[in-house]
Image (cartoon, rainbow, N blue to C red; front, side, top):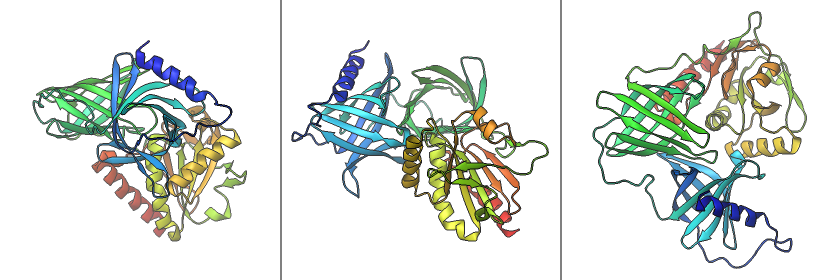
Length: 413
């Protein structure tokens, strides 16, 4: 076991102790505000660097912002007590439990309820680079669109589209999947070798590999669970299957029938008067899902602007825990974070079989999120699998354009 892992275990034990039943309240001189570079030890010998900033929030207190390429993601609230700094990453029920050591913070990423295996990390203040460069420049500009295939340990192949943008030896990008995208990845290129990482509070993402002069890419997605190899080739026309043709209704069905409760126990159904003669958007979602986070950040303000046109939204939540206290907390956090004003209902756990059982008219469900558009007659007009977020650039722009075009046509009917 590495020294950092031992230290994280000791810190976990210390932070779980009670001191005379009260929280330590001694005066704190350490100032956590500023830019930080942290490094996760996802497994022995493999570290994943990230960047974040701790600063004052508008409504008081401290907050943490994760930096990934051009994205600034609000991670949650930060509290300081004695020589400890705790960042509550409520979006994913995680927290960074950190101990002050000189000008550094050392600790781990863990679940708020103490379950799972903590991931050790160390952070240093005032460092704005991500991957430390050896000074070797990139051998070429590898920007572009690539056909990329990931091969899982069980031999299954997943077709994706790799999107990369290079500036000098700095690299950003994402992998566009049928189920969604890898969000904002940031890193460097040295010679032909690339390194990319990302973190918004769930699990750290890490990719490394190499480009070749003839347009090939090889590498792997590396995690604590193992490595998933990738390979591909540059292709300006790289594309995924039509996202509106992957999930569909079973033969003989025209709509979805359901009655699910909100956090107050009120049953909500598509047949309620509130939704009659309106265009309704159903989103199959979960607060734990990064791509669902991106979708909610688009749908919530979009709904506020368009509800007066005779449009409604129902979010069908599949959550990791279903006890009433947990779902109330999780959905309320989600609602407040994104300013959601549409209905949210609790359906089940995030499992494809659960989706199939709760929505039996649906066939070939593949992804959270999945968005279903209902016309004014109450019939399914379109089903969109996955979500291409802002990290995908032109793909996101095209999605928004086509989405609004479909809605406009249905509203005009």
